[in-house]
Image (cartoon, rainbow, N blue to C red; front, top):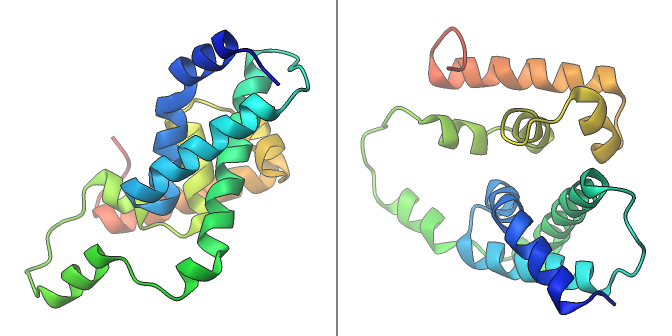
Length: 160
């Protein structure tokens, strides 16, 4: 078990990153806060020492992604519909051009993670491949296809 001082340091350093990853996956603030707490609880209870800060950060990213996937697979989530989805369907408003964030959030799951990790966290394809347990060339393909989908959604020649 880790010390309180060590836990505070990690929360201060990585809470925003973990929260953004959760929002990207869950699109829900309440679930995001639940997973955020779960991830840092796992960190506190994880007794193995990390090789470096990058190893620690990669571990937190992997645990966050897995916790989000576990929550999405839960029985409760399978049989419920968020209220904001119902309100969107009920209100028939004119389509508004998607912003970049909405476009990224609307990508299929397999493209969201590589796009986020590359453009928001600054990881290379090799590092992303290690985190997501994929080959480096697969990551390049996912990034390329994800960019193409974003271009189509945003109606432009590229991401600014």
